[in-house]
Image 1: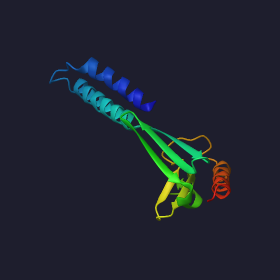
Image 2: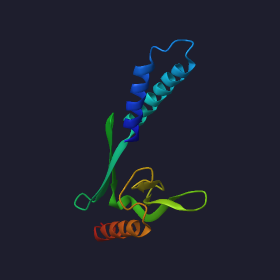
Image 3: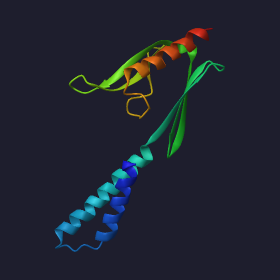
Image 4: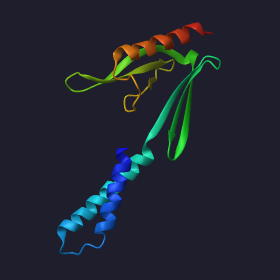
Amino acid sequence: MLSVACVIIGLLLVALLHDAGALDSNAQAGFWFGAILLLMGGTTFAANARQRIVIDPQQREIRIETRRLLGRQLRRIPFADVQDVQVACLQTRSQHAIRYFLQLQLADGEPCALFAPERVYAGASDLAIVAGWRTRLQQYLATHAA
């Protein structure tokens, strides 16, 4: 939403102030401010991604589907590759937790964040909810172990 607002305001400023003269420094500043807003809004809109996490017991895998304006990415993590599931958090410098998420420890040692803190997920700011996600995922992994 913020990206769209930046694009709209940037377009308005650029359109209204595109013919600013060399002596009108305020209008030129407004034009360049609009151009920067337009660039930032367009860039963040294009880079913005929607992510969907799918736990598939039949396929015995976790799928992380990421969709961006410019493409789609799919990552498949077999249940057998998950060594551990932990609740992690993104904190401020004063150690105040902003968002909680699940951190998978994979067999090759690679960590993998589920419900990553830079994305907005309902319940991500509540430790009890994310701990419930962890418990359910651990149950799936244990129930569907090979």
